[in-house]
Length: 154
Image (cartoon, rainbow, N blue to C red; front, side):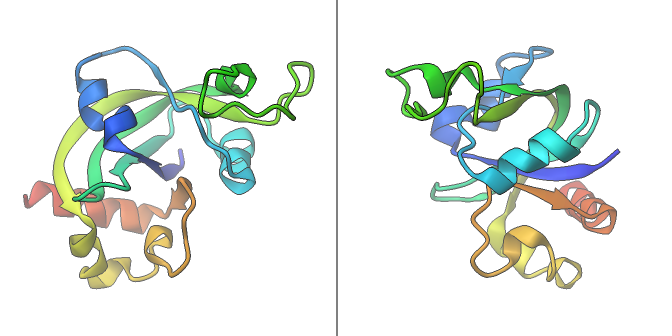
C-alpha cells in the first residue's frame, strides 16, 4: 500500500461532501497536471490511502483520510464543453486526463498548514517544499504516521 496527499478546494469538493455521501465513491476530477496524472495512472492502486487536503481556502490543511476505490480511468469532464475542466485537445479515443475514485475513511480535525510546517519530522514532506503546487503527491510512511499522530492529539 502507498500513501498520498490529494488537494481539493473545499467549496468544490470538500471533506463534508464525502461525509454527506457515506460509502459512496467520489471521482477525483479536474486534475490537469501531467505529473499528478501520472501518479494516478502509474502508481496509485485500489486500497491506497490519501490525506484529503483543503487548499485555496482561508484555512488550508488536512481534513480527512480517503481510500482509492477505483483505479485511474478517463476523466469525462475533459470532453464536456460546459465543464471548467474541458480540454478541446483531448479526444475520446485518446484521453489525456484521468482520475481515480475515492471513498471516505474518516474526517479528521483540521490539521492546519501552519501545524504541518512547524512539525520538525515533516520538513521534507513534499507538499511543504517551496514551489510545490501539485494536487497529488506521494507521502512517505514515516510522514503518514507522524500526521496521523498529530490528528490524534487534536
